[in-house]
Amino acid sequence: IAYPDYLRLLPKTELHCHFASTMNAPLFIELADRYGVALRSTDPATLFDFDDLRDFLVAFRAAHDVLRAPDDFARVAYEGVRSAVADGNLRYREYFVNPQYFASRGLAYPDVIDPIIDGLRRAETDYGVGFRVIAAINRRESPESAVEMVRQVLAHPRPEVVGIGQDDLTPEDTEDPARFADAYALAAAHGLLRTAHVAETDRALPSAVRDALEVLDCDRLDHGYRIMDDPALVELALARGVAFTTTPISTTICTGWHLDPSHRIRGMIEAGLTVTVSTDDAMFFRTDLGREYTEGLLEMGVSAETAKRIALNGVDAAWCDDAQKARLR
Ligand code: ADE
Ligand code: ZN
Image (tube, rainbow, N blue to C red; front, side):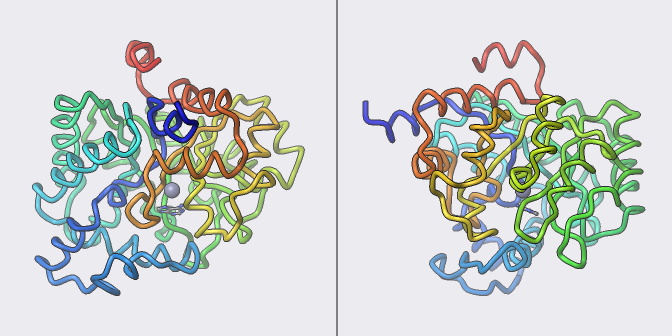
């Protein structure tokens, strides 16, 4: 079997994808049309052309505006699983859902989370793809509203929602993990697991990795690439045994870094960090889990053996129970 075929067929988990970005482009255009949401283009060839992370985030925010009725959420959930199984042999997935985007549009937390879980449960029955949900703090909003979001999660407990994470950026388009210390402490006190988007681009400071581990007490980290700019942080992450979700194709757009053997993700693997691979935002970056492996890992010069290790890291680092992990291995 040829190496790219092997990579595409390898059974995979995905621990870092944003729910709205698992939408398929035709459905996005259909829903935008139904609700009269103006898109920058209706031609998929130009709709998803982004200069950088900041430019992408404008479109990412808008995508939440086309999700309004329960059936919209459930359809995106179900159809997104079907595509990911076909495109990269997905077996298990964790989704970031940002309730704050929807709250600002008049939807309460259960209005969002319940139909999403219904759709994902149906997909699990039909395709055998397990899942968990991570409530994402909107970094553009205040630390107080992040605490309020965590309170909502705690007030409507669902066993599928196992942790908190983040999306978007501060109003200055910077990262500042320590801003959300109160929300993370509240989540920790109630047994929610914690991850954070950190050190994603050249604009972010490597020290965000330290803040996420020492101030937010994160169990996992998303992106984290600039850890490679500070060897002391690599030692810290190794000592903590923390896993990273990396997203090769999204980095080419959000950072402009090339996928070659000098890429920081390859450096993270060589340094012995626990690296996993995800799509981040499949629709927007015109990627899928198969492409992350065949193009992303291949162009960084990752061996077949290491690719398999990365796929298994995605099982080890998952936030499901041990019985489910055993089935995934
Ligand atoms: N929202 C969706 N993807 C994101 C990313 N990579 N960084 C920040 N916010 C996001
Ligand atoms: Zn992300």
